[in-house]
Image 1 (tube, rainbow, N blue to C red):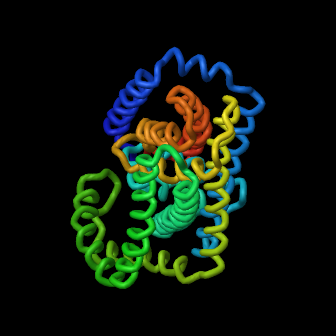
Image 2: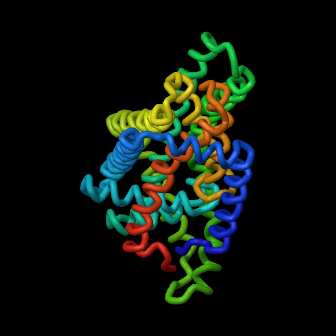
Image 3: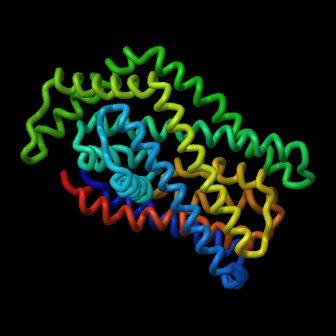
Length: 339
């Protein structure tokens, strides 16, 4: 399963355009001047916070894998999750585009079936949405009481947070109630695609429909095993929450490195709501997330556009580029580009 190089290149070109427009809007000279005032010791603290986020979410994935009978060490889980983030960060639509490749990396590292690996990363990603919605709602509730400015941005953030809070349980409930029908429908839809690929791919035999349906069934059985394991859910949700708090800390420290003490509630709103932009057709949301964070921080944290953009450069430099660079080596070692 190889990355679509043309789609990736096109995505990065789009991200460069968005970032360039953002830099021009806030002022390139003012942005660079603000960045030059960042205190090195606090920039190092941003990297530490980003590392804690990576570590927490890697352990959450490891917890889910253990519930499915696939065991990897703590060090392996961090390396594999860096590879997962790499695949998400270089494919359009973020996690939605990167999960098939991520599952390949996990299956290689954990020596497990592909459908089990896909179920593990799908479960981990789904669980990550729960604490993000809760944290953003807490921030919105607090700012709604004390905010005297930025009400329009707060309204948009509140709408996004409430939308996720409603949509996720509804989609999850409907999917769970109709999982039998969903399994059958996916099996029917995937079978002709898998057989077409098998006919044209070298060294790959076209799979029988029963084989495809069996693997789809294995995927749903793995999802059900995670969903019904209370201890796994609690542990994964706790680690996911720790990861979100580490991400928020990285953004708060980025602003603090520039001499700004931002309201914590504003950060709790900006980080998860800004992450929604990862669903754009840009690699890992690059460009979209930066623009969303700046648009939220200016009114909610009461900072200038240049200060917000400079803080986002520091924050995203740690959250986006650190795992992308680390994960690229992991992905290469595990053979991300093979068929």
